[in-house]
Image (tube, rainbow, N blue to C red; front, side):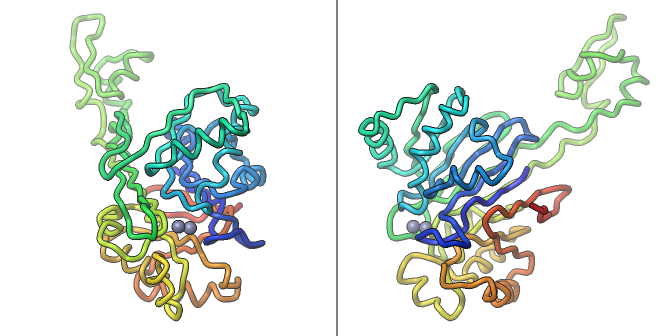
Length: 314
Ligand SMILES: [Zn+2]
Ligand SMILES: [Zn+2]
């Protein structure tokens, strides 16, 4: 699992930071990409990466402010041109369907794939055998959601020596055992999956929030998460503005991570008032509350591996 930030600014694009978008890259998990928010020019940002738009399988929108959705019509139109013909599911607040349908109709944008828009409420918005995604309302100036992405436990590793010892031949039976199925050998003996596989592995949990002031649902969504992505529009000195505009300071983000007992925090949605030279101060203010803090810049990539967050080179 990897996270790649395509836009980490707040409100408007700047030369340093585009508007909000982050890719949860689940290629290794066989799921393609899940995109969270799609600010203006997100598709331009993708051009500067090795990401393939046709691999975007799901899009989750936190709220309908322009800095989170103005890139959506362009991106879903281009996905058609770029050979994306698989179903695309888009999740977001009420109003998303009308806005998208109206925009696509008036601009006569025709898609060569099926687009399904899911207008969500608090609760489980998606679940299959591998993942569960929970949405909950945050505290912003318009309805805004955070998403908690839970990977379900993975089957234990196949203990190949034990399987060979039990007389399992090379081939498809090994895969079935690995997938948790008990199998019968040619000689009639039964091999129990549990006897030749290790303990199930815990899946990861990533929480990606939209714009918000400090709130209890942010803490609940991030409870024991491996990675929390939280906005940090302001610093400690401009905290009065954070409260007024439904945003957070770097301290609020760090407090949520701490109270939720998250393992790592990535701060995004950084105001253009902060120059690169200000980032050390923001980092110090956040770290004083929650040490495992990264402040994302556009194109930053993070990997979750063996229970640790790793910042990758671009
Ligand atoms: Zn925003
Ligand atoms: Zn907003």
